[in-house]
Length: 296
View 1 (cartoon, rainbow, N blue to C red):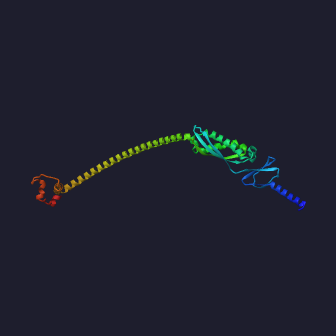
View 2 (cartoon, rainbow, N blue to C red):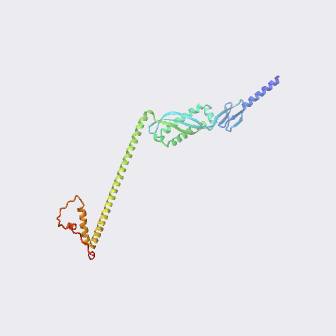
View 3 (cartoon, helix red, strand yellow):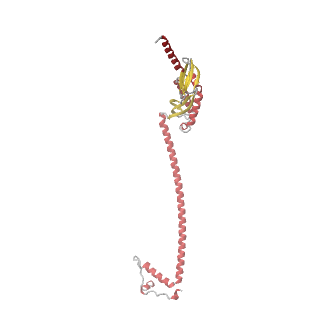
């Protein structure tokens, strides 16, 4: 191979190196900042193959996806002077790569340190105005929204946007747990005693009403029964009087025979009567049948 061939091969290699240095790819999940001698010149947000000036311009990629920051556990004092150990997290995006680069450079540790400081101070300040029941209730969404707004305001000069802030865990300090549990137990016992007392009172009222209703119903029933008995006795007397008026002789005989059935048929009844007693007259002489004219 002669010198010309070597020169041509070297030129091809140089051209390939220059071409490789001038081409770069932007991924779907990235934004790219182009710098020239360390000075930002443009931002590329469109994915695909792009070019730059080789050896002069540099490519700094930034992740455009949702990023996460974990807030370490920290003890805070709430507005009602309760102590609470909380740890949380924040979700953020790099929305302005140029401002981000000018503020903290390319190292994630730098933005994590700044975000952690801001997020921690906002947690302490906002939670310091809230009570324990509020932090543990549905009001937590409002509290998190307030913290997110404050952190976004404080971090807007760093080219990031805070999408979400959440408390992952909120626990009482170990020294306070037993005391709080004791107070919660006492409160629950007080509420249970109140509910039981209200139940006993309601049961007493219901029983009294039922007893009063029972007495009224029995009184009404007894009154109706007495009235019906009186009506029945009156009807029986009327019927008996009418029957006696139709055939007095038969009625006398029937009354005598009824006395025999009730008195003599009962083995436990003892009667001391003279044989000439009128009551025993039908035992020796049968009653005479009444004449047809006696029945009218």
